[in-house]
Amino acid sequence: MARISQHPPTKPLIGACRPISVEGSVVTLGFPEDQAFLRDVAERRRPILEEGIGAFLGRPVTVRCIATNLDLVPAPQPDGEAGFVLAEARKIFADDLVDVGEVS
Image (cartoon, rainbow, N blue to C red; front, side, top):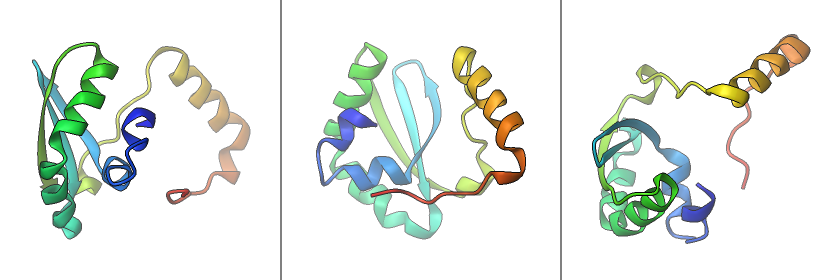
């Protein structure tokens, strides 16, 4: 996200989408159904997305953009140390957790 967010016109796109799958060299990004225009904009900016995601993954990728109901798509699960940190934070702040919108 940090690398792609350096390109100002692409920053809102990467913040609005959710990774759906990685199958071989194809990365599927889901955009909210009620904001399907974002998917269209992402298609036009696909080379920037492919370059940024490919650099992160360490290999060339093709990005596929879809409009989907993001509420039905499970959020990616943290692994390793990130999972441990998240579990500990939930123990400490359990009743104080709030949903925070995007910070700009």
